[in-house]
Image (cartoon, rainbow, N blue to C red; front, side, top):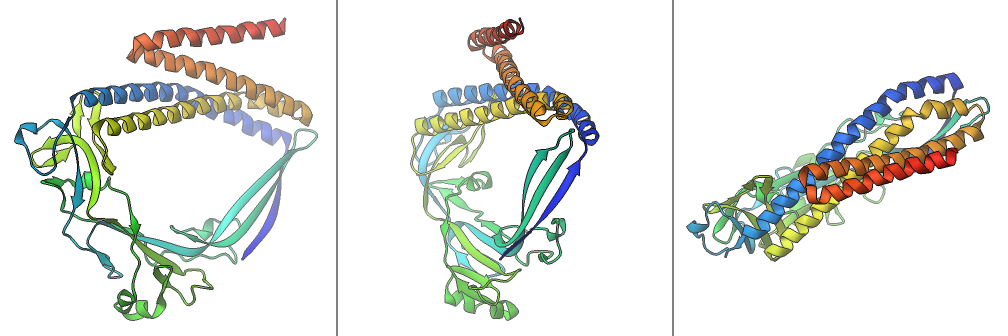
Length: 383
């Protein structure tokens, strides 16, 4: 079921101009903060790269079936099967399994609001916004607060979820002759479905048993799974089975492991499957590079949007004639993108000069050249 309604709002030119002037402060803040974000991101990347490079050189591969005291406080790599003898049991539903983890996944049928806005400029600098709110019933893993809806009437959700998601973790997990600390057990996240059975359903007590049925391998709490009502619940279970093959790189401390502390950071790597030390470090390096590019993009966008907001009052002023405002907005957007790119590259270059001069200095020359070239082209066009 889905319903919708439309809201039309308008803003005058003076109101828009006032908002854009206030936005200049936020734009300046975004612009300024972008520099330390970029600088910190590069420093983090270099330190992590150094840590992984150093770790790859000193790691030693050991066997999991015996603890060698001579490897104590060394960086070790090993493969093996993570196991536990514990049986994990959900306290509310009685679902149990001999597993490393047991996840209860809960979804509730609720109203959900969608919002879509379209804005058009009006002659004289005003602005009209048409916002369409639509409502549909959908399954969601967390509570949706219907009181925050634009139109809560007729779209009421329960005030709380009767049952919520839950994760149970085995306390005693071994890897051959070693014991895994909770910190490393949490890193094992490869799950598979654990279907519930009629026997488990029959063990439910009181009203819960009367309200529950089995649907799609899990419990359904409600009158009819084929025609769900607001507040109905779907509850399924997943487990990290045991034994499960894992590969680990960490510091050996007696018969367990801890993050291996180095000058620029710690090393604690865990992957499901049987991987060599080289493969694990290569994957960690790829993850480091990906995070580095994400932080670069964040810094660049912060800078670009900051510049755009700083010049926003000019665009709004020109919106007295909408086509003129659009042209000026496109020009400012292009200008902001070029300047943000040049300054981002310059900041990254400075960071690399600070952390790795041999790479940073050539990069700095390129970035300065890009800024000079942009100024030269701008002057030539102006002439």
